[in-house]
Length: 392
Image (cartoon, rainbow, N blue to C red; front, side, top):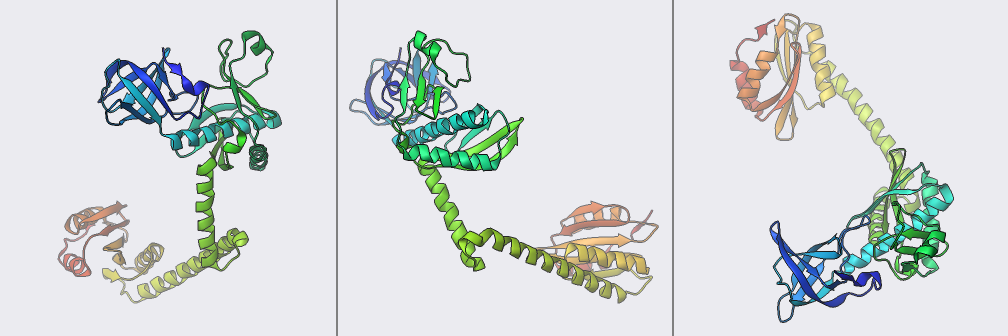
């Protein structure tokens, strides 16, 4: 049996223990200890990481921690024989960040339950963010209000208690729980905000949580899925976003509070420019098509976007050009659109051209589109020597 030190002291970082068992697992090993500060995976939270150090030996990384029955198993990178005395040390930065997030999740879940009558039906505490699934719909405005209230709870520095109430007392408690638990239930209480069954380590006081911040909300299985951060992770996210806002603000010569409006305004201006460029491109295509003699095949090179290139080919074919091949530079390649009048099938021709000019693309008998990895000189040379286009 493993004594779980984290149950009574979530802030203890080092401990002495004896190895009870050592087993090979996969490409590594796992050891069970007689006592540990390492929390095993459970309750939506990954197992702790850190090191185990035999007396006089090197630090051996603990890569994961799992629970089986009354034992806590520590995945390690080297075997440690049974009976060995070891010093365990948590990756404290990781553990504390997870405690901040888990305790923060309890506050917001309690608030959503009390205010909106929705329950936490899914919880995942990753190393990047917290994912919280709620049982019913909640507006983004309500999410932001819960964020404000949750940070009020943090600023109040309330005590966080973790206890195993006697069975009779447990029957009188109202608490959140995803499972129907009746005995040896660990209750985590944040007075005025949440009472919940939970096996994980938590902070001692809400002030340790730091900032609580929601990132997004999306509809999810009849409810909502929220992404959130707490503590140092939330602060880092806010700082990164602030740097982005400051950079955009400077770039657009707009006050930081007006960045969204400035971006919207510039997007509208860019869309207007794109539409004008498209209009001018089509005019240029039509003008170029006018120079092509009817009844003769045409090979054209023009610096036009794809819509204008297509307009050129369509205008040429409508004018009576039996086959129009239009090419436009596209990085290190040339984009192409080929169009033909009735009675011609371009598909054999484009297959032959793609093979000869390292191209890719295709289409219908009347129009094909793609690109080739060839120079203008190579295209012109192949076009001059090509086989006659098939008649359909």
